[in-house]
Length: 57
Image (tube, rainbow, N blue to C red; front, side):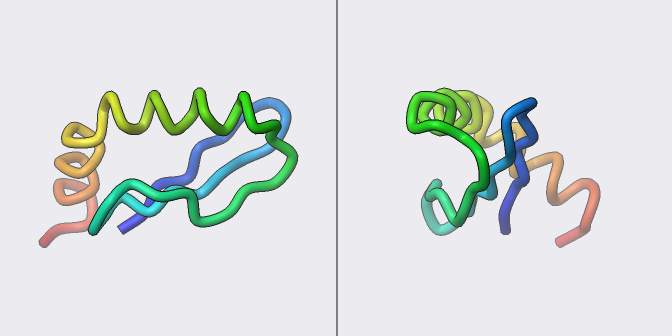
């Protein structure tokens, strides 16, 4: 299970399970990646629930 994060300077893909982890990215600075990861971590359960609602399972 993963999520894509879009940003004006690039994008990133984060694995959500078994633990939150950066899969890959393009065009983002370390600071932008850290910020994106904080947002995903803050909303992790909400994102996982939405993923299950959208994709099933």
